[in-house]
Amino acid sequence: MKDWLLPFLCGAATGVLSAWGVGGGTLLLLCMTLFLGVDQLTAQGINLLYFLPTAGVSLLFHRKNGYLDASVLKSAIPFGVVFAVGGALISSAIDLSFLRIPFGLFLLAAGSSMLMRRSKHG
Figure (cartoon, rainbow, N blue to C red):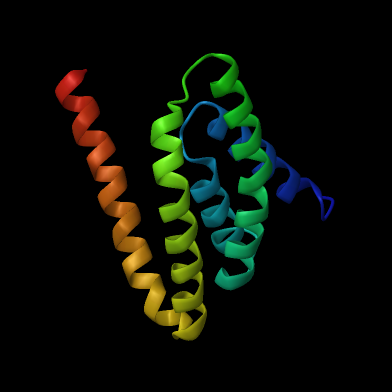
Protein backbone atom coordinates (compact mmCIF):
# COMPACT_ATOMS: atom_id res chain seq x y z
CA MET A 1 0.00 0.00 0.00
CA LYS A 2 1.25 3.47 -0.79
CA ASP A 3 2.46 5.61 2.10
CA TRP A 4 -0.08 8.30 1.34
CA LEU A 5 -3.18 6.10 0.89
CA LEU A 6 -4.03 5.35 4.54
CA PRO A 7 -3.60 8.97 5.69
CA PHE A 8 -5.67 10.10 2.67
CA LEU A 9 -8.46 7.65 3.51
CA CYS A 10 -8.43 8.68 7.18
CA GLY A 11 -8.64 12.35 6.22
CA ALA A 12 -11.40 11.76 3.67
CA ALA A 13 -13.47 9.61 6.04
CA THR A 14 -13.17 12.03 8.92
CA GLY A 15 -13.96 14.93 6.58
CA VAL A 16 -17.20 13.26 5.49
CA LEU A 17 -18.12 12.45 9.09
CA SER A 18 -17.31 16.01 10.10
CA ALA A 19 -19.67 17.32 7.43
CA TRP A 20 -22.39 15.16 9.00
CA GLY A 21 -21.67 16.72 12.41
CA VAL A 22 -19.99 13.68 13.97
CA GLY A 23 -16.81 15.39 15.20
CA GLY A 24 -14.40 14.37 12.48
CA GLY A 25 -11.49 16.20 14.11
CA THR A 26 -11.63 13.96 17.16
CA LEU A 27 -11.82 10.92 14.95
CA LEU A 28 -8.88 12.20 12.91
CA LEU A 29 -6.87 12.60 16.09
CA LEU A 30 -7.63 9.02 17.08
CA CYS A 31 -6.81 7.69 13.60
CA MET A 32 -3.47 9.49 13.55
CA THR A 33 -2.38 8.32 17.01
CA LEU A 34 -3.74 4.77 16.87
CA PHE A 35 -3.29 3.75 13.22
CA LEU A 36 -0.68 6.06 11.72
CA GLY A 37 1.77 6.20 14.65
CA VAL A 38 1.76 9.98 14.92
CA ASP A 39 2.68 11.27 18.39
CA GLN A 40 -0.14 13.02 20.23
CA LEU A 41 1.34 16.52 20.18
CA THR A 42 1.90 16.42 16.40
CA ALA A 43 -1.56 14.91 15.87
CA GLN A 44 -3.14 17.72 17.90
CA GLY A 45 -1.33 20.32 15.77
CA ILE A 46 -2.45 18.63 12.56
CA ASN A 47 -5.96 18.42 13.97
CA LEU A 48 -6.00 22.18 14.55
CA LEU A 49 -4.87 22.80 10.97
CA TYR A 50 -7.58 20.39 9.78
CA PHE A 51 -10.21 22.19 11.84
CA LEU A 52 -9.62 25.68 10.46
CA PRO A 53 -10.82 25.14 6.86
CA THR A 54 -13.56 22.78 8.03
CA ALA A 55 -14.87 25.36 10.49
CA GLY A 56 -14.56 28.13 7.92
CA VAL A 57 -16.65 26.28 5.34
CA SER A 58 -19.20 25.32 7.99
CA LEU A 59 -19.44 28.95 9.11
CA LEU A 60 -20.10 30.10 5.55
CA PHE A 61 -22.88 27.55 5.06
CA HIS A 62 -24.45 28.31 8.44
CA ARG A 63 -24.41 32.02 7.58
CA LYS A 64 -25.93 31.33 4.15
CA ASN A 65 -28.73 29.29 5.72
CA GLY A 66 -29.42 31.86 8.46
CA TYR A 67 -28.26 29.73 11.39
CA LEU A 68 -25.94 32.30 12.96
CA ASP A 69 -27.00 34.50 15.85
CA ALA A 70 -24.88 37.65 15.68
CA SER A 71 -25.38 38.58 19.35
CA VAL A 72 -24.24 35.14 20.50
CA LEU A 73 -21.20 35.30 18.20
CA LYS A 74 -20.22 38.75 19.47
CA SER A 75 -20.24 37.57 23.06
CA ALA A 76 -18.76 34.09 22.48
CA ILE A 77 -15.82 34.93 20.20
CA PRO A 78 -13.77 37.03 22.66
CA PHE A 79 -14.15 34.45 25.45
CA GLY A 80 -13.42 31.61 23.04
CA VAL A 81 -10.20 33.24 21.87
CA VAL A 82 -9.01 34.02 25.41
CA PHE A 83 -9.71 30.51 26.70
CA ALA A 84 -8.25 28.84 23.60
CA VAL A 85 -5.00 30.76 24.00
CA GLY A 86 -4.99 30.06 27.75
CA GLY A 87 -5.62 26.37 27.19
CA ALA A 88 -2.87 26.18 24.60
CA LEU A 89 -0.39 27.86 26.93
CA ILE A 90 -1.32 25.59 29.83
CA SER A 91 -1.22 22.43 27.73
CA SER A 92 2.20 23.31 26.33
CA ALA A 93 3.56 23.91 29.83
CA ILE A 94 2.53 20.56 31.36
CA ASP A 95 3.66 17.00 30.72
CA LEU A 96 1.92 15.40 27.74
CA SER A 97 1.23 12.14 29.56
CA PHE A 98 -0.82 14.13 32.08
CA LEU A 99 -3.26 15.13 29.30
CA ARG A 100 -3.89 11.64 27.91
CA ILE A 101 -6.08 10.34 30.72
CA PRO A 102 -8.34 13.44 30.98
CA PHE A 103 -8.69 13.51 27.19
CA GLY A 104 -9.62 9.81 27.11
CA LEU A 105 -12.13 10.35 29.91
CA PHE A 106 -13.58 13.32 28.04
CA LEU A 107 -14.02 11.20 24.90
CA LEU A 108 -15.71 8.43 26.89
CA ALA A 109 -18.03 10.92 28.60
CA ALA A 110 -18.90 12.66 25.33
CA GLY A 111 -19.56 9.36 23.56
CA SER A 112 -21.65 8.05 26.45
CA SER A 113 -23.63 11.27 26.54
CA MET A 114 -24.37 11.02 22.83
CA LEU A 115 -25.42 7.38 23.15
CA MET A 116 -27.67 8.08 26.14
CA ARG A 117 -29.31 11.01 24.38
CA ARG A 118 -30.02 8.95 21.26
CA SER A 119 -31.40 6.00 23.18
CA LYS A 120 -33.86 8.23 25.07
CA HIS A 121 -35.10 9.92 21.90
CA GLY A 122 -34.78 6.97 19.52
